[in-house]
Image 1: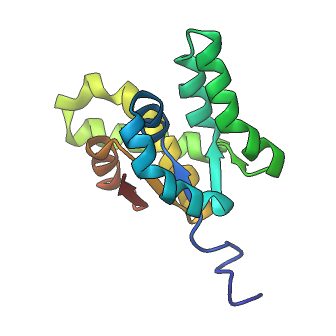
Image 2: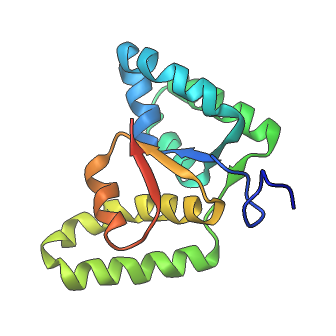
Length: 152
């Protein structure tokens, strides 16, 4: 194994959360501020199926669909796609149950956390950093599952 790999993983891999893509679509200033970071990390970035689902669910026009397809195209071409496994779904259920047990006040928020938990679990499997604009939810998830994330 080369020194560039750790337990079979390429270091510095990343996954961008849906919130980053949406912020980039909605704000030219945000897009321009994050573009250098995205460009640098692109060779080691994976596109999560959960993010694709969330983005496509928000496509209400052909132009929006085309933008999402443009995001996905390079990842399809290179095969850098990741999806939750059966074990990830099981662990997500366990984590949601723990959150609800400890934080019954978050009952209404749990459906919104499912996707964030699945993104985090995919990142754990890759050894990847999650980049997000959704600090609140990922901070909550990190209390129950150790993973790396950074707010962008």
